[in-house]
Length: 292
Picture: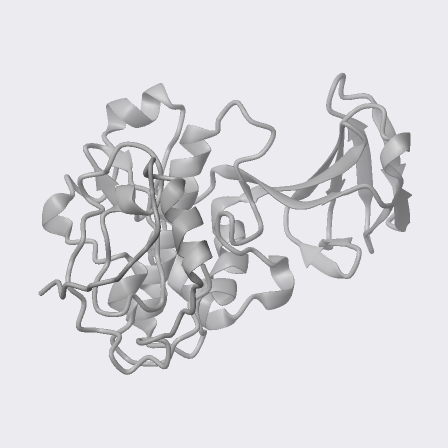
């Protein structure tokens, strides 16, 4: 989901052509948020981001006071000056929380704001960064958009990223984590990539999200669509969402990825079609229709 194309007007794509006439406002209703125990407006909600899933040891370092406690019973395992800790998956018998004061926690070679949770899940160590929404967005924006883009593009990206995060927080509220740090959700690289310009875009749009029928939308975004987007149900399984419909896009023609070439063998085409249609025989010809 990385935005990497050049051009002054591509920022419109960031919100996937969100025509706000389709939206019922810029924030969920108070009643809806109370039911979900969410208060939007200050970006101080916590978000839980899976940053690693590994069967190898990891190193967590703090340069100042650090506390390690059990998430099961809050018993303190360590509370003292900062140092380097090595965690081995098989040694983690219960989930632990690592907090630091006066400095950021470093996981292997990357710094992160907030706290770190460690969980042993079937022998794998799940490393989860727990931090405020605005802190999370500080590490998302530079990972998903060029920091030198116009300020309004950065703000649009901030709204899209925040909306996308809140959608998954509310959707995954019973899960171990809300999102992971990869393109499976949206890329998050922690404090090491932060930039003053994107941080300012996050702060200037604090609490702003896009909604449809009083709920945060699934704010997919991309850099180049080739002239058209498509209905979401042609890309993902499930019911089509009314706000994700095919629209014409004149904004990415200058992108080097506006046109592309894909080579498929006859066998690959047949196998792909078989996944959706039964009784596919030999392909004897291909015709194309232009969609205006």
